[in-house]
Amino acid sequence: MLVFRQLFDPQSSTYSYLLGDRATGEAILIDPVFEQAARDAALIRELGLTLTATLDTHVHADHVTAAWLLKRRLGSRIAISRAGGAGGADVRLADGDRVAFGRRHVTALATPGHTDGCMSFVLDDQTMAFTGDALLIRGCGRTDFQQGSAHRLYQSIKTRIFTLPGDCLLWPGHDYRGLTVTSVAEEQAHNPRLGGTISETDFAGYMKHLGLPHPRQIDVALPANMVCGRPADEALALDGPGWAPLNFTFAGFWEIEPAWVEEHGAAVQIVDVREADEFTGPLGRVPGAVHIPLGTLAARVGEVSKDRPVVTVCRSGARSARAVAILKQAGYDAVANMAGGMLRWRAQNLPTAGARD
Image: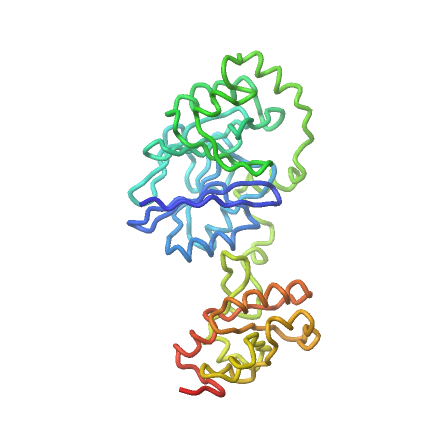
């Protein structure tokens, strides 16, 4: 069974793609974004997968890749086109090379034109292809910098991507209108730049007069991506909040294990957001917890000090996750949700105040 997730970075409108082999648990991640590394790592962990490699479709100019960061955190290899010239990769891909994940693989297709090193990745059964910035939904990548060439891009799309099966789904590197996926047949018929009988000369003339501004992050992104996203300050990039061993969840908040809370309870503020009858009910409560029901938390945030980290608690961890968001919005930086809530606390036989068995 194929595990597949399309992920999105709103800052750069970049799509990343996670593909995994459920039988072996191995996975690859295409075009990861640096700022989303914690989110992606959390998803990989929650799905029970092992990230074996990150693949970048090209040296990006609009965002920094998370390839280096994920290698340091998860041990994944870095794969990118040899023609792109980036340093720090473990695998330098050539046209036709395969990248395996368990029993599945993708094949690298050289599709230059947006940049010299652009590659598309085609799933082994040709039902899916990941085109990066070469072919977008009803569009294509620009060709006016980074050794771009409209003539090469036209040939890449017409002779490589458009020769895939018509029902092959094409997953782009970006979209700015909320679209998510297209197909070979759709783009052959409806792409206004490349579809139908549009000639190479027509396409080159179209691309010459786009008049686009340079990407906003180009001065940061290009140098960083030439070293596969390795930052100048490695320690800062690798360290999360330093006050506890936290896990970043795919839902976008930090979690902490009950055992750590039990051992270090005096160093944090524990805010229980259950209703009053639950706080005094049979599950009991974490010793020392302060009771502020979730419905009143926004109005009572002043009762929570900013001098010590905050751990939020509820029955299962769901309402307390919302409490984390409320506190973050109120300016509390050191805040985390207790994973599993009181149900996990009790399951682990941790000391409990007011419990009735």
